[in-house]
Length: 619
Image (tube, rainbow, N blue to C red; front, side, top):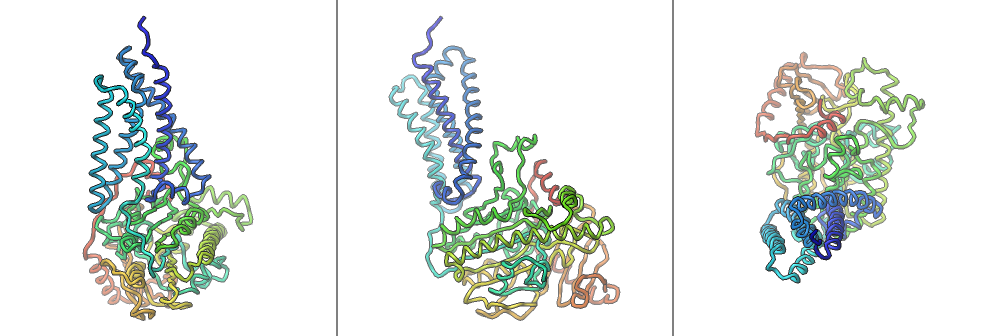
């Protein structure tokens, strides 16, 4: 029986240990990618709580180590199939095999990351990364050649392992980021609350509201009482806010539909001006793979749970082994965002904080004021069956209980916004920040359509709260009754910052510095319902002065309301005002007949479709 090669056991153990150790290192790399920070990895440690990191690394690292060990043993078995020569070859070069395999992983990851960059420097880095990857591959092949001296093989193996460690760190340093500009530019903060009706806030006249911190924002600047969203769907609405474009212009007309690639976002514009940019979003529809709102953000934090973002565990979710969260609670927004703000307060930053809590299902985290605990538990279990229901299917008490839960969700968000504003004041940023508070759409509690928003263009669905403040440039304690659109805020913000704005459909709300325009604009809205209600077609609406028209191009009768006399839109005046109805319909048709960008929804796997269905976005 032939003898085994000398030191084969030691080589096998060394190779196996190296593979497992490097596999655990991939866990760090995967955490870095999932958090989507463009800072160096050491800055990740400052951005996120250490306990979070340890938990992620230990859980994910062990899983990667297990997968790496299985893969290593699998390769070993393939070599064993070639007999003793294969076993001896594998034993002598086990460490090189492990290191080379990890280098290939890093190399492809690097190429993928660099392909999304722009500019000559990025092309140079891509070229260098390609050359290095080629050299690594050649080196790995040479290590298996008999004529190569042993000492060269050993040093090459060590070099491969060292580069394996260095590559992800070097690639995460933002060589391509714009230089920091310490100037008079103010910070920019957008606080957005999903599915928020203005009439549930104290500053909009609700005396029972528990929203003291949001109400305090209204006293810092201008409160707009006639602000309109351009569409009552999360992704298209935020796309309009961040671009100043109608959905028909930017191309995202439904959830899970990206904008046209040529569209420029607010984050891109501000980053080009020297701002550091970060977004902390909290709802599943805003995940980067379902929209293009991450464009321009150095950090786009769309990870809501321990498992979220790790591709290794995707298949486990399909079998129900793990469950990904579909949203982030309000307190998680401040926990993740405040360390980032503290670290970047010395240079201009743009931060978007998004709260998802008021969206269905309503489940406030603290003790509810719904008196009957059994009723509360039943509501939490059955909410998915209540969305979009008719009034005849609901009892008055059930409606009131659901409204109570909705208000409590808003109160929970208000508490976190209080933490944000207090932190800014304590950091001395209160007078140096341009702040916008806004919602993407409302929520319907009327018109025979309850606890939903994606099937109507009534005021309850498209009228939104909007407040803008900027000490020294925006007047304080002002209430505006002029009609504005969410797309107007994009050019307005850039005008206040004295930055040139890309072309948009909105208008600057200030006639001159510090003077709010007194001219009301028409407010247009659209709604493509084919994803949720395929047989119902589209809806368009037009607000012009006190008049509101809702029209369907599929032949549904138009509805006309006088909002000053009928704010609840209960009396259709289209038959009494045929000429006005005809003129407004013609104006709507002309508006929709302009340039329309068509974007396609990317293919969705079954699991993604089920998640969107669970939130009421798909049928």
